[in-house]
Amino acid sequence: MWIFLGLLSAFCLGFYDVFKKVSLKGNNVPVVLLLNTVFGTLLLSPVLVESVAQGHYGPGETLMQNLLVLLKAVIVLSSWILGYFAIKHLPLTIQGPINASRPVLVLLGAMLIFGERLNALQWCGMLLGFASLFFISRIGAREGFSFKASIWLWMSIGATMLGAVSALYDKFLMGRFQPLQVQAWYSFYQMLMMGVVVMVLYKLAPAYFGGKFKWRWSILGISIFLTVADLAYFYCLTIPGAMISIVSMTRRGSVIIPFLYGVLVLREKNVKAKAIDLSILFLSLVLLVLGSRG
Image 1 (tube, one colour):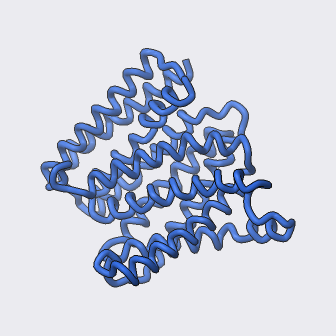
Image 2 (tube, rainbow, N blue to C red):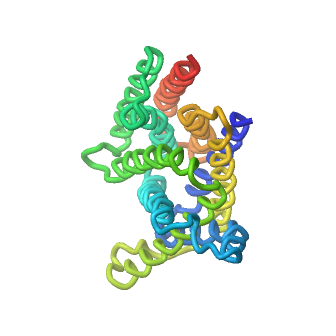
């Protein structure tokens, strides 16, 4: 069951990335992100209303418990801010593989934080994952997106690293809170924080506000696909026997959908080289999965 939920989450994440690309083209990134947090909170508002009706004004019983979920919101929102700017300016066939390398960082973090020991297959998978990152950075340099010249590439790497931190933190949270409570309240906290960010940028730093906003229905689609993807993911982690490394890797299979969109619809360049890099990345993920099962 947890594998099916992981696949459902991956499918929704794939269209989530496509809808982000469509929504952000020539658009105001902070406002689009704010609307996504608003829609995400509205979709989960029944959970918030029920919680408040029962006298709970947060996901936990104590201030410290609520701060734990607030920290989750800070991590995710930081990752989103970097990721939204990256996906707006980078080709999907570059941004996608970078984001899909997240399981490699999750496994590295699991080794360093939780003391997980890697076997030979996992070591090979991790090395191939880092090789894939290096390869895609070289391809990006051909298109003008080098580490020296492109801040968007660094933003993509930063978003991926923060996403890995979030995935590791999820396993900690899911042992202490109900998934829906975490999802609803961290969405609410994100909405409040992003609202403050937009107001500050608009009032104090208009040069960084991001230009004119254009409404597109794909903006609503971002929130719908992400909410379904996250709900499937959170419930997946609560199922006995679910492994965070395999779940995270399964979700990264979502890269196929935006990659195909970038190739077939956006007609992005260097497709052959990027397909080779994606194949290396998938081989890395397969080795990590096989190593985890062993």
